[in-house]
Length: 263
Image 1 (cartoon, one colour):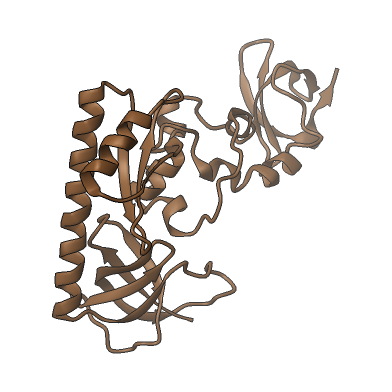
Image 2 (cartoon, helix red, strand yellow; image 1 turned 120 degrees about the horizontal axis):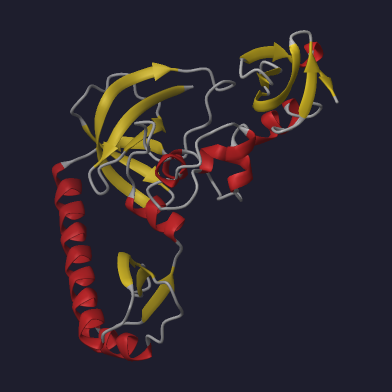
């Protein structure tokens, strides 16, 4: 499978796209086919072959090189969207609604959909009425969650890579603080939370592996007996099958699971 890395102009994010082209070079403007429709972007790295059995299949594909007409069209659409969002935000402020406008979508049927986030349920009937009078078309307000907002807006995660939800995650899976505990990660919210403010999606990638590896290991706080004396478990390493033991004399030793005996 041949892929090329492209930076979208709309969201300033980098995506890996499938392509049949071989002569693309960094700086080329191209048209991509994504879930949100066709978008324009700039080639970051030239095409290269990857093993589809190792790397996930890209969720977008490169259609062709962009023309001057394409650039003009996308620039007009961006200006149209920015203008719509600005007017909608002004209306929201005038009405004093506790909501945040995130994005807008123009359908081919003439409908305009505004995406927003809010802590509570919002009565936006008056807002819809005023927007319909402003744009002379059908208006839809669609509330989204913090994760969906991050997926729409794009960004870079703590790892330095584009957000998983934007590049390859098709759906959001449930993530719990227990997953972080089982993997021995810091429970500092700043370290295990994503741009959306929710727990990192990647906490779930290895959760099942750790869940299986931790089976049979004594829990932290368990009193145990070792060749070096009695103590208690203060830390687990499920992947190495080792335990950090604090002996009664204060010494700390890392021992294999088979080297200890639960009292």
